[in-house]
Length: 279
Figure (cartoon, rainbow, N blue to C red):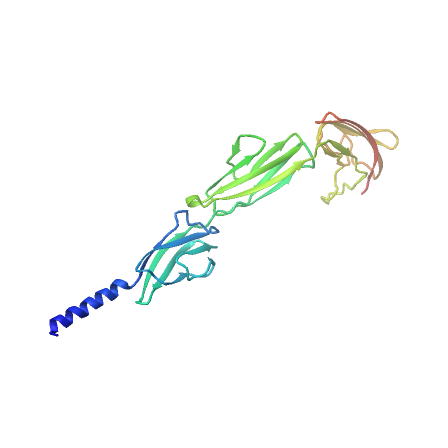
């Protein structure tokens, strides 16, 4: 066999060998690369790989599902940043590697606190936004068709029922998040007269105020134990701070409260009770 023929055979064998070595191209998912979202990377291969081995750098804050020996891999990232995904494919002929660098966007986190000004209805719901990584947000309510784009919001409720508040926090590239708060306001009105208060300016039980829910109208009169008029108010959220209507401080002792009220549900109240002023 002459030298030219030997070289041609070796060249042909080398070409066939290389032609059998597998290759792979990493295909990124079509959804936005957000943190907290399962991202599945697939492959386009040649020459029938029989083994796959994946790795990702940096590897901290990355969850991998399932294992790293499949022709695809699912990753969930806890932190945004630039990552490099590597894949080795092999068969009996040999092994090749491929790489893909991509950026993961930190997902917006929708979080808020909801607090009511009083129990029952009417009441005001104060919504304080504690969201992070957001660009803007929208509040929506199940009882009205309108939305609110304020960062924090205030919502008034004048009737009983089941309600919900939804906050959508919008992030970059659609990496959004949603938080929902559902609640129920009492079906009926009610009034209770407390029997003691301590107006000593320590910010604890400093005022006398009937405990009311669902009250539309209220009139309250305060009298001394001898029947002397002391103080009055004509609003559901009024109160007595321990002073007379002329601004004089009242002495410690027992006083009497007369209350008339009407609830949003039409129920009427006429109550009398004693209250002790402690100093």
